[in-house]
Image (cartoon, rainbow, N blue to C red):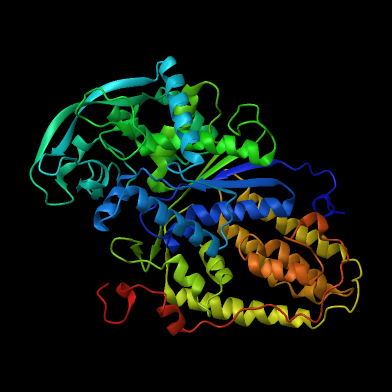
Length: 544
């Protein structure tokens, strides 16, 4: 008999999952959801099915320059913008059933004091260890607007690949660079001529290349991302930015009286991670920071390719210098999720907004999640194509899976079911193990996790087996579907007499089904239903 399905010998393990802090300058779209957020949620749900103890902690990247850009566009303040869109982000995550156990807004209480204490403590410790350096650099300044043209205020081309860039990094090749390295630099706004001023900025020394690269190899980071890190270190001399000349942010001691200095957001994610680790210790009851070398907590971050340098250098690299902190145990990197072959874009309004999909009476959130989970973003970019989504929602889910569920519902026993066939239990155990291999690993594949679910759904032998096979097929479906389709999974589990969320250890309990409840399923989605959620860029006659 399966150990997982009986709960025997399984010791629950603590996990901390930290998807990236979203920049609160707009709502979330499916490009945001389809990678790091869905990954972390599916991992956490599978771990809970298995009997483990995951917590998901994220928050707002409030001090990003794009918050000040949005404030300028809306004639508002950065504080107001961060608060307004921070609430929208939390609502969007909840609408797509992305579970979050704590959402940290570093500029708001009760988080502000805690975050600023962590910033001060971390910098002091890193200074004591000789890891904080002062360097001079050339930075563009606009006297007419009294603006330091850095971050999103600076436009140009990438010094690595030549692609158009804004801020300090390139979304095409993942390169990060100094403002003075930007090719053909220009201000975002026509506010007056730029002058280049030499200022002093704080940087963090990072470990020697071989030391950091060995750690990345131990974390099973793909060669292409390790090469990106190596190029960055070669160009920037084994340092990563700690301060930036900007007024919005956690202020740091200013070497020059007339130049503002604030914590650089990409350095701030190190302090954010440490704060998330401390919050995990409180919420989980372990009483220790999850990044304590002896915490016993598996720490995982999920990120897009645009966050390779901040995560692998600013967090992993800095943790090696901190001296009392383990790096993340897993850094799970995904390629971008696109819309009709083009990058999702908030500014260009080329996006499907999470709130619009969730509010549609015809489109099930489960269908969206299942479709997004089918992309293999670990290996390559993927694209949301309307025809493909309609095929999945209608043929795969409404017509096929929905009809299978309805047929099984009609064969449910009147009372407690007989024990499942041995072959049924063995197949379910093997498919749960496949999901573990796909989700609880150094390389994640939501597609492989969905494939395990699909194999169970298509197995007519289980559903039609003697001794109440329909009951056990439905119950197994709830376990395997829970990571990708939580609404369906919970409806089935609870209709079969289970409580709360599906759990492997409770699978064999012969709880009687409530046959008065209707069979859950999926409604068909029309092209018009989906069109209502599409941006103008994809409507008939629009310029693609």
